[in-house]
Length: 292
Image 1 (spheres, rainbow, N blue to C red):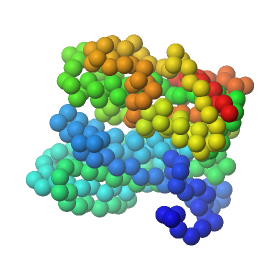
Image 2: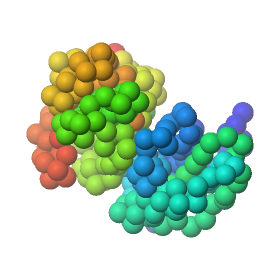
Image 3: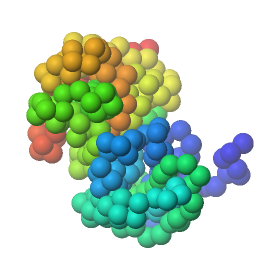
Image 4: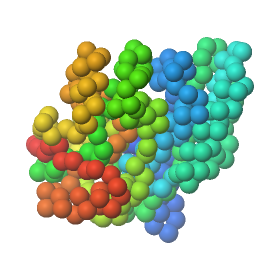
C-alpha cells in the first residue's frame, strides 16, 4: 500500500538497504534514511556530540556501502528539545560535516524543528553506483559461503560498558567504545566487492547478525548455517563480557550497530575475496554457508 503506483525508474523499493532508482548512462541513484533518537539510539550523557554527528552520517553511508555504491549528497532533519545547548549542537554539526568530508558527500539541505523531548536526527543519504554492479539482499544461492567484514559484537560491548560505567580505565576496551561512538562505514570495501562480480548478495549489519542474516535469507528464499566458533571478535570482547556479566557470543550474534558488511559468494571465490579484504585493509571472515 505504501509503494504507490508502479514506476519503471524504480529498480528496487522497500526491502533492501537502499531504494535504487535508474539514472542515466548505466548508473543508478541509491537512497536511504536513518534516524537517531535520544534515549533509543544514543545517550548524550556519555556520547560526545561531535562523534554522534559522525555516527549520524556513517550509519547511513553504511547502507550505500552495502549496495556497492558511493555516497554523494545528504539531507538532515534535526529535532531540538527546549533549552538545548547551542554549543552541543555546534559540536554535533562539526562532526557531521567532518564525516561528510571524509566520505566525500555533501550536505545539500534539510530541516530544523522543535522536539518536545530530546534530540532526534534523521539523515537521508543519496549515493550512486553502476546499475549492473548494485548488490541486493535477494540473490544469495544455496552453497554460498557467508562472510562478514571486521569483528562482530564490538558496538554492543561498547554500549554495555558505557551504560554501566565499567572498564573506563582499561585501554583494551577503547576499540569497543569507539565502535559504538563512531563506527566506520565500509565504502571502499563495498565498492571493490561489487566491482569484483564475485558477490551474490550483500547487506550491512545494523541490527545484528541473527536478525540481518534472517532478512537476507527471507529476501533470497534460502536458509543459513552459521558456525559460532568462526565468528570474529577480539580477546577484549570476551574480557568485556566477563566484566559486564554478559555473553560475548550473544553480542557477536545479536548485538547491533556493528555496521560491518554481510555477504555471500561461491566457495571458489574465497581466495580472491581474501585478497580484496587485504587490499582494503579490512579483515574478511567466512562464518557459515547458505543452505536450502
